[in-house]
Image 1: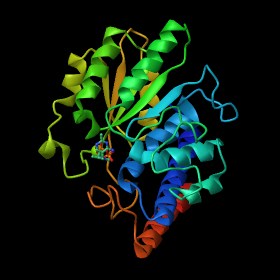
Image 2: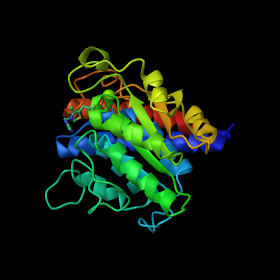
Image 3: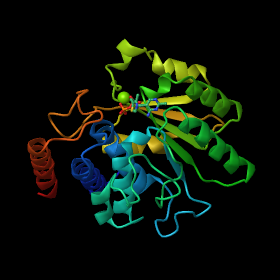
Image 4: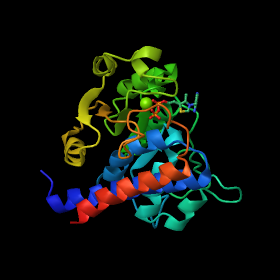
Length: 280
Ligand SMILES: Cc1ncc(C[n+]2csc(CCOP(=O)(O)OP(=O)(O)O)c2C)c(N)n1
Ligand SMILES: [Mg+2]
């Protein structure tokens, strides 16, 4: 049971992340709001409570690592990093702008706090396996988090990585699957089915925990359940694509499209309304 103050604080951070997702994608005139909004609560829990990290020392060798394998959700990651103090929040206004460092997909060479360059789906879990294995070999106690999209896990390489993770007994590896049930062209179950998803990961030797990926208390509690039992863990986080903006929720159309001016104004006023309610 986490205290109410902490939960409220993280809800506020998730809301700020959502507002920046809308602001930055609107200003850029391109980007991926849907999958950024679905992962905002998870990122808030990680960067503002669960992860051991230091924004003043982004390359700290003992830090927990995070690989945003679904790299198109960069606007949410950038917002979390900026709010945590890795770089000035004002930079978020320059997303995807020529001459600025926040590219459409995360670049580890340009953005402090980004542990791996991603965007080409399917690769991130393999990289996270390598980082986790390195941690074991170096006798370090850092953990590696990898955030995967559900459409993304249709990629064959994900399953090679899943197998390697259990082979090497990587209990320092925690994958989080953003199960928003939509990919670029439609529902995952119509395009290339994934179910029974929990069973599949169990069969690959993983501990599987299924949660509501928008319930801050449940997300935080879940991290406490993870055991050092020589098995990697996957959290299947049931989410809603576009979560937090009514006309984006559960839709395909905002997978990779910015809001129009009118939609931007509506989205911000909805989020600000929730913010006011939280502050009451
Ligand atoms: C290898 C590769 N193929 C295609 C794409 C284009 N692409 C970007 S996002 C996306 C859909 C991903 O769906 P999902 O993993 O479910 O992400 P989410 O719903 O969280 O946005 C696709 C096909 C890509 N980035 N990389
Ligand atoms: Mg998806």
